[in-house]
Length: 457
Length: 173
Image (cartoon, rainbow over all chains, first blue to last red; front, side):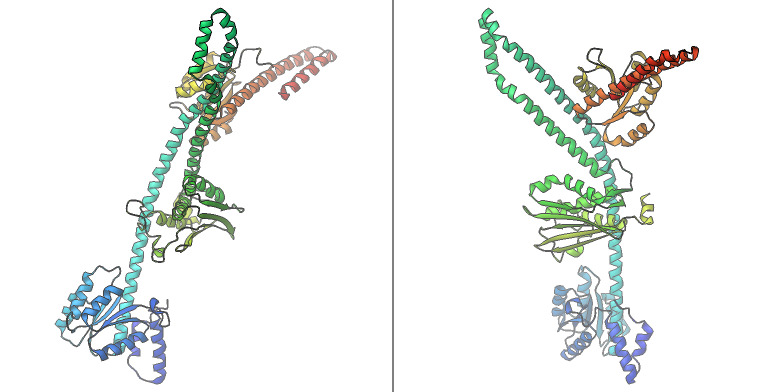
């Protein structure tokens, strides 16, 4: 955005009348106009100004001037209309006459100040009153500036320019505040992650031991039961011999075999053991994935193949993927290794993939593409899900922003991702079309910057 | 080297969890003579009293870790083959133990029963091999002494050939 000329220069342009100077003034004016989004920009991108005056001629004049300076003018013929238009358009800049029938300029200012706007509203009161106490009254009501009619149009211009400058500063301040909130939220999240990692480590160990001996016991039982069956078969082979000596005992044995359905038992003992062992193998794999995912055995900073990381994240989320029968493809012919904090990066991939899966309907697709070029790697996660609407898209990295119903999402996921990727010296960009799908692109340098490595220590 | 004709090889299992020891007994009771201990101290006591071919210990135990136990076991019974088995979180301890030469193999929990039997069997064979090599070296030392004492080099030629055959045979196992 072009910079504003400084005060002195702007003021000096208001005082002379020679043609060459006129031309120079026009240039400067254009330069100044550029400080509002350019005069040639479509109205939607220009700074909006609400202008209220009950005098039609003044209104027309002001409208022409303001439009000429590249502002998007909303004109109101009285205070009532001004208030309605304000609520409808929430312009950042308001230029209003004081004396108007119905709601006057002072009342309008008070209402604007009482109204909780998303951004600051800069109000200039335009009036024929010129006493000092009038100025005090106007400023007390909440006006930012006070201009006596009929002022020089250059004076109006510079006063409005001041307004725009203050609005921009206010906007920057809001941005900085947001950054601070981001950082704070990311900090809270990373502390949570640490304790989660410790929990996972403890669990992996605690689950492992019982799984180990239960699996072993099953193998032992399978073998021992097979032995018992072998012995049993040997006894059964002797049943005819037994019948010769004690027919009643032989019948009792046959009856016992039948009441317990021995043939079923013999057929099913081994399959039952095999099925139980398979189940335990799954538990073992889950523990393994959990451990891979939390990178329990690794140092804070490490060199890791990004494709492997993607695959282990997909494995952890397999249950969600299967639920919706989503076709997930991982393209990682290039599987570059990068220096990173693996646990944090895994969490990022996990969050983004969960978002992609949640955006998907039944049998949608998710494609994850790993690539590398010039010392950087990229991961694109593309889904064919519901997409993000234009209104929400600019806000998705804000902490606590969530579209899920209250209680379902904390709204910290993407802001945390943003923090982690920034910490790695990378970028994260989200493109989305409602109804078409979303692509998240992460780019990371292969080598972490020394600053980040220091932080890590 | 026919193990079935002689006494089954002795194995010492060490784990602070009795369930694990019980389960392992069930798996290994047929192929091996089993001794079990729930602490490192108990295990060292057994090592001093009984000849043990293979010791297998859990890494994570209170008081004495598996790696510490194997370090001391090596001092008491240098020929015993040492195996460490561990949960996931102890990889660093295993790497250290392996690098210090205290460990023949390591296993992760949960283990595969067939694989465990296989590893223990190969460990006992390794033990046997080492023992036999030692015996042969002992004989060779004796021979050398006899050669030094007499000039009858030709008389020991046959015995040297026989020893060479034996070494080859052992290495084929």
